[in-house]
Image 1: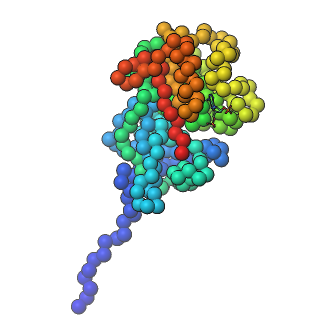
Image 2: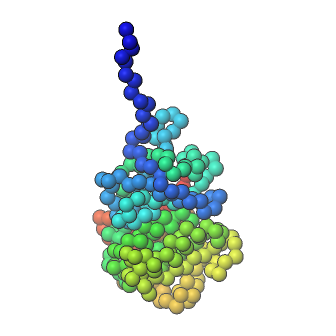
Image 3: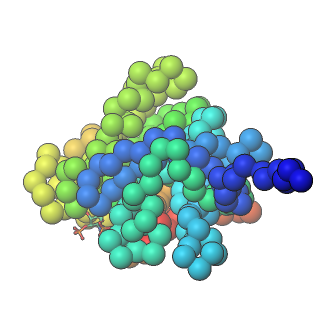
Length: 269
Ligand code: A2P
């Protein structure tokens, strides 16, 4: 009797909450960014984070919090990441290629959102290292530019090459078809390094405390009536910046009680 058993073609195993990587850009041996497809149901506010990752060797998802670096209107998602050689996730994620899958839990959360701030005139974006990621989202969101008369981005990294992701994004803003006109005359960019010579040197904290940033940019010092701040960096950075902002009279806000500044921890593996 002929064998009539039909064997189903072997399907490529699909991860739960899988998204496909569409592009990968490496900036330094410590930093890379990638884009992936966006779940149709995913709605988020610029500045929020989600859990993303890969399937672990034990068959369980290995997930970490990552700020979404793309704006809420973008049809894809973008993430900016550090590479930690022995980091459980980033040691593998850094080798991801277009066409491969990542896991993405579509539940965005976070405090680094415009809704958690009271109305103001100037918005300070204060970041170290990969802490620029949520600002990459907020800077490409028209709402940021509609709500504020001036946006000041202070980003400090150890070395010049580590500023590249933020710098390229910020330099492209005036030519952006959606927000180019809104940005005109409103953006002040203050990129600095601490361990390699560059035109602006020093930690964000030191340049605020000494008043260097105000004199370099020709602007008034912090004023709780008009200034709003969003902070994203290492735990130590966040703690030190909070002290400076509080000293200047700004209070920490949250989704439920908006105030003058908000803080988010940058992803570290
Ligand atoms: P520094 O080189 O003086 O340590 P990292 O790559 O370690 O996350 O650091 C990113 C940037 O953040 C570096 O320029 C580093 O400066 C700076 N930084 C680290 N800790 C603090 C802090 N507590 N306050 C302000 N800046 C900090």
